[in-house]
Each structure stands twice: as C-alpha cells, then as structure tokens.
Image 1 (cartoon, rainbow, N blue to C red):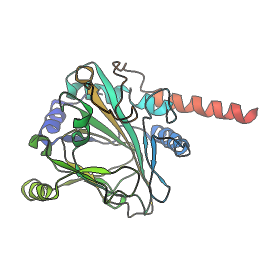
Image 2: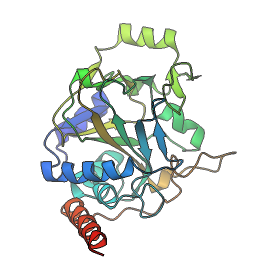
Image 3: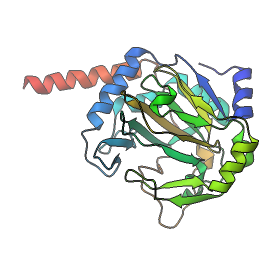
Image 4: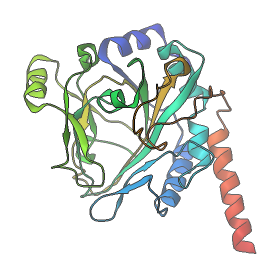
Length: 281
C-alpha cells in the first residue's frame, strides 16, 4: 500500500490520517489471540491498572524478551504499514522505536491526559522530532470506549511544555501532560478535537508532536489498540544519562526489512500448531 499525495498532504496539515479496513478480521483475530496470551505474562514490560487488570504491554515487536510476539513482530514489517511510514518519514531505513498494546478494559480502563508523545521522548535523546506512531484498532472503537482524541494541526505548535503528573495515574505509569493553562488555550484557539473512531482493522498514523489524549472506557466492551512508533535510523537517539529501559526506548536500530503481508496470519498459525503439539505430548 502506498499513500496518495492527498493523504500525505492531509498528514502534514492535520498531524494524522485514518485509513479504514487496513487489516482483515483474520489478522485482527490473530493479534487479539496473542494479546490474550501476553496478558498472562508477568514482567516489567506489562503494566496493570490498580485493580490488577492489564493496561499496557510493551516491546511486543522483538523476537526475544518476555512479551515478544511473532504476530506483532510481523505486523510491524507488513508492506501495508512500512510503505506509508517510509513515505511520511522520507526514508527507506526505519526501525521500531517503541511498541505497546493498550488493553483498556470495559468500565475500568482509565484515560490519558492531553500530551505529545515527544513530550516523553525528548528526554530519550532523539535528535529531531520527526517520528510517527501507527495505531491499529484491534476492536471496534467509538467515543464511549475511551477513544483517542486528536487536536488537528497541533503538531505545528512545536514541542510545548509538559509537566509530570502522577495524581491521576490509575496504573503503574505516571503521565507527562501539557500544562493545564496551556491546553485550555490550545483547545480554545484550535480546531475541535477529533475522536478517532472506527472498525477493528483501522490504521491511524499520527505525528509525534500531535496533541492527543483519551477518556475512560465507559462501555461494556474492551478497547484494544496496538501502537508502533517508527523512527528513521538516521535519527537514532544519542546517549543520555540514566536511559529508560529497552522496553520503552529501543536500542535495536537495524533497518526493518519489508516482509510479507501474509506474515501475521502465518505467525499465528505456527503458534497455534506449536500449542497443539505441546498439548499432544
């Protein structure tokens, strides 16, 4: 898949684009099946709500580590994703800087304050803020599910001041958020926030400076979404004091190969075959 000139222009104008029907029901089911497995893992890269319910699973894209996932690794390398990423970043050499799966549970999944992703990553040593995140919906998402909201065009503001907020953290990670007075000013002077809703299999690309947040899940259904952050190899982070762990700041800067569009389903089928083999012993 290649983005059209109009889609690229929309991305640069608004700081995001939404592409429906990018991944099939079979592929979504494969990713959901492995998400269910990952929710049973106990590791530093698996974060939970205060209730104990899994909220975020990090570093699912590698082939090692407690949360490694062949279907998610395949997802990050599909042509449907890598071709658009390379177009937007203007580079054929990109790598995954960060992955997580957010499993916002029914009736208890918490929200996230208004922020820019680079408000976190600026402390990780990246030379420039030319990074993007791809979000894949793993469940149908409406506003009631605690959808993302994006402020269109907010990436053009540059990096704005963030503060460190742990007063509203309902799970293990405190938040960095745009200063309250500043976000009020932005909301009053910018276009109305856009709810990012759609069917499972929808792909969303957004700039690392695009201001976004989400509400709580008030529905009876879980809201599952996968996030893959891409960076050009040329923009790999510089050394910093006390760097964050590899599960949030990848140190694998090898350029990604473009693999098969069948790889997600194939990885899932191999995993199921292994499981059946183990059960038969």
